[in-house]
Length: 361
Image 1 (spheres, one colour):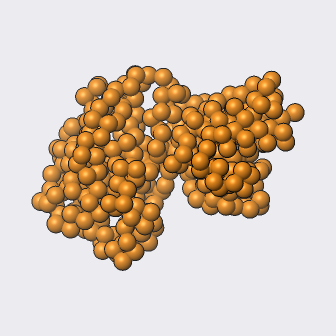
Image 2: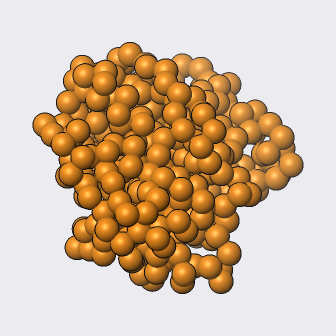
Image 3: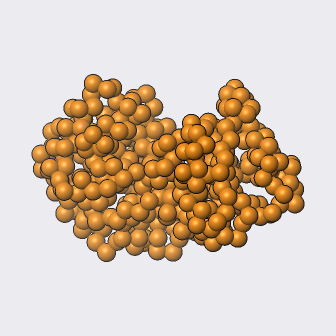
């Protein structure tokens, strides 16, 4: 059998590359003669650059940028011909903000990453959005690229309360002739009930009682910048980084589509007998541009069965089949929560071995 192995990261435990390797390790214990085709995936969040490098090759440019609270952090730009790929989480991810929360976290470093790509000669820059710990509407990115305002743009979302006018001309001049792509896994607007603050603020450490005030600050920032753009799909991605990129002329593409296109996943699915995907938590949010849904959709088009391996599975069989997944297997249920967290690679390999017993001919 030919098995296409296309998982996302298992957040906090395994990268997509590591997850794919673990699945292969376990699968080969039961079915050593199967042909295993590895295609680590990303939706634009953490691991985006590594996945694109594995798919496309190219050269990696190591840079140092400003982190969410101004301290320097290491990051990488992937250069493939005239196209550069950058990952916002490297400069402002949740792993960098921690318990400090998002109110004062800035996206300035993401702007520096885009600037580094321009300095390297890129005429097309693809920005992976996802996993951010920020909620500043992309104001920091705008400042790093040359935008100005009558208040601070690079000190986090709360500081935007003092901003009533924004001039984007400097940033737009710097990006003249450059094609920007915002690779995002969410299509929410910047503000409102389904916007960046109210939807994703709590998971970034913003207290419930602060959400209305911060959403109002982003409303004010949008009015000072481009109110209409704040309503577009994807404007709320990565705490509003999507908004800033759209203001600078970016087009939005689902992150999973960027990756599946680069990896020729549709073609590889047609050449396979079974597609295996996975992620840390397989739940209802998986339908919103997440890797398992995108991979399963291509498997359905190719008329191939798709199964998912996940840290935990929070959807029933009817719901998973609606997503295009025949069966889903939970590490927590099959090997226990303690083992799943203590040895995620070994646990995933063990589950993959069990799955192979069912699905490999």
